[in-house]
Length: 359
Length: 169
Image (cartoon, rainbow over all chains, first blue to last red):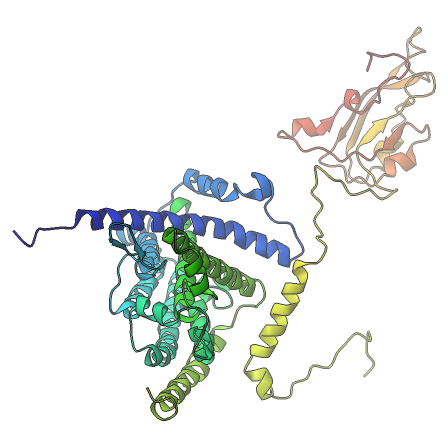
């Protein structure tokens, strides 16, 4: 029975890692709602939530509790099964992407066992992200359609077309990056961005692909349905959009999925463009903490989390600055600006790799 | 054509330049503005802890005044009710009995005096109309409550406590 020889330690490791990541993303998403309200308040010269606990830190708990106690309404004319499936799908796909993010470097225990801080190092890492992110729009689409509400339906159509339009530019902008890295695996991409300064040049992909980064970021905003591209849920035109008919925790799942998505996509943007868990003077730090390798691992994870939090703050920062795009402007930006720029960027990168920086 | 105000601004409708069309410079400018607001003074007043000072002409809840001997000034003449644009004031007059001189200043007094605070618009006309200086608007904000009935303020609620005689309302 050779096939059934399962490494139990590995399973335990992965189960612990998965639960920590799931709980962590839920916790971070919870506090992202608090953070968003604080950021919004600070930018509008207000104070923001400050009643529940010190600095309003218990506000997310209060919000969650409120959502749980709300009456659960399923509209009479809705398609009941799909109506319930919608928010579940949104939440599921939001959490799934976190599986391939490398949260820290490998840690080698004293007994020589390698513990990986990545749930699954799959060789097609980025393709997996794209696949799952594309599935994410199903949550919105099914929810909007099953509500049997014209506004919700309109909003889900918008969400679908927006996702399709921006995925193209996103994919093309990433091709340029992949030509540089030569690998789809996120672990491989992170390892290539070791440190900060390498061989007389910045090692982070952001400095090698600034145009690609801007396109990718713009598309990430659109994929996340975040302002200025939050057309599926624009309050003023579609009053709430796809989650108009939702109440109680089903609504909470939709709202929450958005924040988890934001957290995970920040992690992926940081991994792809800002060197993941790498930080400047990494080798010196590793050398200094040689006696306690676990310390170095923790510092790496903290470096990644700091970058992710900064990225989330940037997402919020943009949301409270820019007005929403009109629908035709959104489509025009996607098809007539981002895709051509991404194509040119890909071409230029290819030419440079082929003739200028010969490998 | 003559302008109504001189605030009108001619909008520049010329086609956007390349710098405007790539959108990123103006985006950075916008982000700069919001970044600046982080360090600005907050406009919020944390209400129960800190209160903004009222204007000297602020008009809040009414009180019925007493004279220097602690007798009620109101003679139930009804001028306040007449002046009230919201018709919030109702009263019933009664005649003073012998031996009640310390309670009521003149021969007639208000046996019942009610102000419906849900109708009241706090215009202060009652205060202006009163010939006896009996009704005044204070600086107290009307507190909220759960029932409509509790917003009808009776004479007991309105009359200021007698400083001469503690314990009596």
